[in-house]
Length: 253
Picture (cartoon, rainbow, N blue to C red):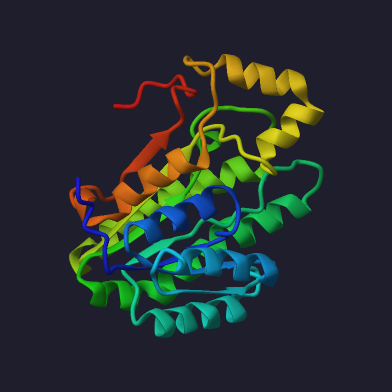
């Protein structure tokens, strides 16, 4: 299937590792020009060079998305460097944690506000695209009780609600908005590798909940994101796509 992505321009946050890195690698392989950010310039530079070797225009900067003004300024520079924006994938997350109130502030600023600021800043450019697409990375932690009460779960749930309502608001402007909610995704340096080493009982419990007995990979999530973002997914807006290998047990009507 031709996804119709060639020549599109995408901005992806948190794209030097894990799911974000897999997303930009796949988009570049489909002929998409990409702008990306993360916290470390060295990692950004290495990722940009890898994408350029695929023959696309790629650029990136080290950005702290909690700094709203700096983050919005980078988004505008990214649009200028790419010559527009057709796809926005807000992927940065503060991750889990329940040890203090600081986690709630951090997850709100990183997960929620970086997404909201990004959507608001890029919306005029996405409207100009004529086929603008936002794909917000959520989590199955927002859908079912898992682990302990923590900000990550609640903020990802907030993003799913925000996505649905934003889709209704901007649909008439030709912009689609969806979320993708991955289940447990294993990769070197990721949270599930850490859990495997430090909390093996939790890791084994999660693995038993997956019917086929394995966790997903960043590349598998990236393929879902690419389809949802692409013109091939043009009928989808306001949807939350669960990509969890059967991990969750709810019935989704």
